[in-house]
Image (cartoon, rainbow, N blue to C red; front, side):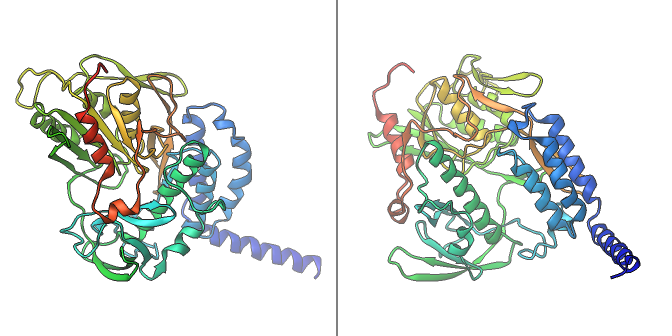
Amino acid sequence: MTRRTAALALAVAAVASSLLSAQVPQGVETFDAAWTTIRDSHFDKTMNGVNWDGVRAELRPRAAAARNSAELRAVVRDMLGRLGQSHFALIPSSADAATDSLHPSGDLSGDPGFDVRLVGGELLVSSVETAAAPAVHPGWRVVAIAGTPIVDLLRTLRDGHGRPEANRTGADGAADRLLNVEAWRIAQTRLRGRPGSTVDVTFENGQGAPVRVSVERRPEQGQPVTVGSLPTMFVRVESERKQTPGGKTAGVIRFNVWMAAVDALFQKAVDEFRAADGVVIDLRGNPGGLAGMMMGISGHFVGERKTLGVMKTRENELKFVVNPRLVNAAGERVEPFAGPVAILVDAMSGSASECFAGGMQSIGRVRVFGQPSMGQALPALFDRMPNGDVLIHAYGDFVTAEGTRLEGRGVIPDEVVPLVREDLLAGRDRTLDAALAWIDRPRIAQ
C-alpha cells in the first residue's frame, strides 16, 4: 500500500467512524456530563478510592466511538460500576427505550400479578395477587420466561462459589444480596410489559411437575405519582388486623414505595390500630424512595425528637430527626403509639426502607424480622443527560444513630427468618408469624 492510499484509507475510516458516532446524539457530551456530575457531587472527595481522571481518560474514547445508544450506555455504566457503590445508574430515555428488543413499545407498566425472589439458587414465586394471577402459586419455581430458561439468565450472575444462599451475613451475604437484586431485576424486565399483553412462563410446581401459564399483564395498581425525571410510580398502602398466637391484636401496615402520597394513608392505618396490642410495618419488597419521609413516619411511634441517622454529603451533614405525630387524621390530640412495633425486611428492602428500619433499630424502638436487606442505602439525585437519559447518582452516605453504615451491609434483622420454599408452598409467612409471636412476649422497657 502506498503512502497515498494508506492516507486515503485512514481518511475513509475516520469519516466512517464519524458517521457511526453521529448515530449517537450527543454521545460524548452525555459521557462528559455524567462524569462531571459525579465528580462534583460525590460525597467522598476521593471518589471511593477511584482515580476518576484516569477513568475518564480510559473510557471517553470508547464513548466517542460508540455506534449506537446501547454501546454508549454500556460505557457510561462501566464508568458508574468503577465506584462499586449503589445508587449509580442510568435510566434510558423513553424514546430510546422503545428500541429495546424485549419491549418494542417501551412500556413496562403491565404487572404480571406475582413477585419473585432468589432462594437457594432458585427463582421462586414469593407472593401472588390471586385476582391478577389466579393460576400461579407461591413457592413455584420459575423455569423459563418467554421461552428463555432462567438458568441461562442467571448464569452470568454466578460468582463461581456454588449455590448462593440468600440469608448469609458478612461479605458473602452482601454478594448474595446483590445477586438477589440482579436476579429480581432480570426477571422483572421480562415479566413486565404492556398492560393487556401476555407472557408465557413455565413453572415447576410443588410436586416437581412443569406448569406453563400464559400470564396477562394488568395495569399497575395504586395511586400514580411522579418525581422529577423518574418514571411514574404507583403508591399502594395496605393494612389488616391480625391475631397473635396468644390472642392479642396486631395491626399490619405495608406499603410499596416511600413517596409523599403514603403519608396520609399510613396515618389513617395508624389511627385504626391505636388500640391494638402491637403494630407490624412490612417493608419487604419496598425498594425505597424519599428518605426524608422517615422523619414523619417514625413520629407515629416515637414521642421524642431522637436522631435516627445522619446523611453525610461532601460539604455537610443532615440529621434525620423523628418528628413526633401528636395529631390524628381528624385533627384530634393523640400520643404516638407506645406498644411494640416490628419491622419486616427482606433482600428487596432498600434505600429509604433500610434507613428507616436501621434507624428505628438503632434507637431501640423496634425489633426487625426477616432476611438481611439490600445494602443499598445511599441517597441519590436524578439528572437528565444531554441525550435524554436520566443519571441516578449518590450524593450522600447514611449512618444510623449508633454509627452503623448500611451501604453494602444492609439491615441485619434482630431475628433472622430464612425464606424457604417449603413455607411458600404451604402458604406460611414465617417472618410475619415470628413478629406476631414477639408481640405476645412480656414487655420490658425498650
